[in-house]
Image (cartoon, rainbow, N blue to C red):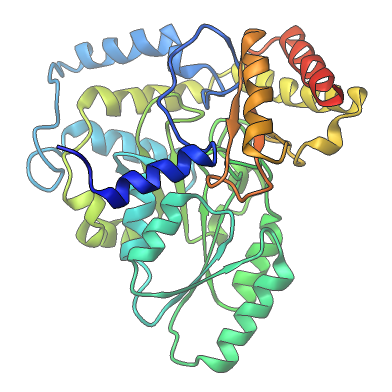
Length: 383
């Protein structure tokens, strides 16, 4: 049975604009595309330790058996959520099945009908989807533009007295640009206008801080942020996410976050992997190596004279802006033929004219690999 004509036309439009998405085939190329910043996803010690933890605690169960409110709230959840809350110097943590679930659950449930959400225009799709499901009013502010944000807050305060709570929403590391907002300025604005600051730290966990705690803790701002969303599929190399905040927020989400309530819980193995990965952050030598690689990559861009091509970043994500789907796909293909696994990010995933190559750095990336890929990129751009 054919799909409806309207769907066929949308697929055709994607093909004509060279923006059709396809599931990639796994390769053995040098990894500049995955979010496995610390190599935890393929860390054998974490794999063996997770298995040993389950055996020692006599947990030989394959699935959660149901939602956490029915039969799926196995004992590992309490242990792991307590560990996460302590690690992030917070009162409570609530694990969701994914970062997408956490953002959709939080933003669809927490802001109320008389509230307003002000979010950075480059916030992740999961944040935007959750906001769309909310009953609150929402407005985007220009990326990392604090004057624009304050102007919007002032306008709301003077013309919309019925609003009860203002939420300011951002990411500590933006997934497509790799840049970081001025968190101190955002905290000051939230305090000035009695707004609640919410920060997605998906791409900061395992990258920033002495133990990979994220940007907020690295700047000692954790007590000034209403909620943090930590995603485990990047720096921790596993799956799931958690909303970090106070105990009242956790209780509220358990009662009203639909993406938490109406889904089967994570398996004991998945939750144990999260716990062991967090424990490895406390002794990780990979974090220091990743930081060294980020510095080296930035210095190499400068030496080759291609730094202006890139969005400014001190994170593990580095994006070279190469406008045009056709052009950026061609350069990505040429790099892939040289053995480098690097992805082109096309419009409409990013705005038209902002197409890019997205380079992800890792603790296991070698200096020679970074030199080689930037040399190749420089030659292709100049050619």
